[in-house]
Length: 84
Image (cartoon, rainbow, N blue to C red; front, side, top):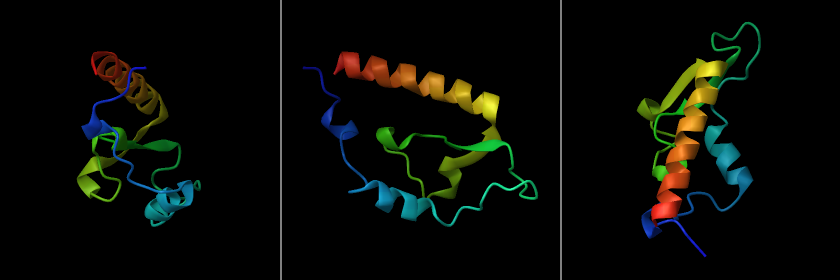
């Protein structure tokens, strides 16, 4: 069975609730909110060592751009997994 390299397998959160608590300070998406209709994008995804608490790693982008970024990172993840 293929697995990711050890450096990519560190669990940052013990539960989904712990992850959600880390993101809780973010604003709710309501029409009056400046980022309504946008998605939060991690410049470096958590699975690759990115942090959800470092402001430079968080960026609000349009939904289409977010979908494209997700596709890109999913391909990187698949490639790294194959090479591990």
